Amino acid sequence: MSRDSTPPADRKQTVARNPKATHDYHVLETWETGIVLTGTEVKSLRNGKASIREAYARVKNGEVFLEGMNITPYEQGNRYNHDPVRARKLLLHRREIEKMIGAVEQRGLTLVPLELYFKNGRAKVALALGKGKKQHDKRETLKRKIQEREVARAISARGRR
Image 1 (cartoon, rainbow, N blue to C red):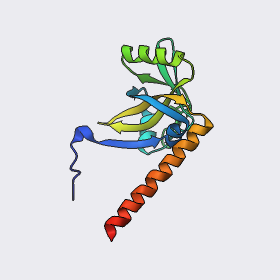
Image 2 (cartoon, one colour):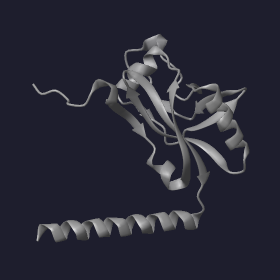
Image 3 (cartoon, rainbow, N blue to C red):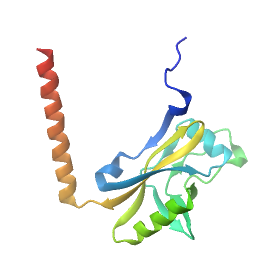
């Protein structure tokens, strides 16, 4: 039986990612936030039944809510199950929320979740402040990624000779 060599404080179990977020937005700043969940939602997340592809965060009355995240109802949850796409409150410090409010009120900035994961047994969301990319920006990013991939491939091929 082998054990994981990473210390317990650094363990992170990813549940869902949003790779489209970095494609559609310039990520300006990120925060790690807690999330308020019910019991069956946590059990469903531990089974990996969540999607954050259509999710976004919204500031309402000085609080931040994650909307559009889909957590599949827990199979053994019966009447205690939750609404799969309800708005969920994010846990942040007051200064962080005020900073987000100021940034979101500027033109074109959006709060987008990048990743949903468990850290030390608690559900966390990596939330990013993003500015929407134009079509030509998306093409530039794609070209740059292809070039970087080709350079890495050439370097690794050179090392094999």
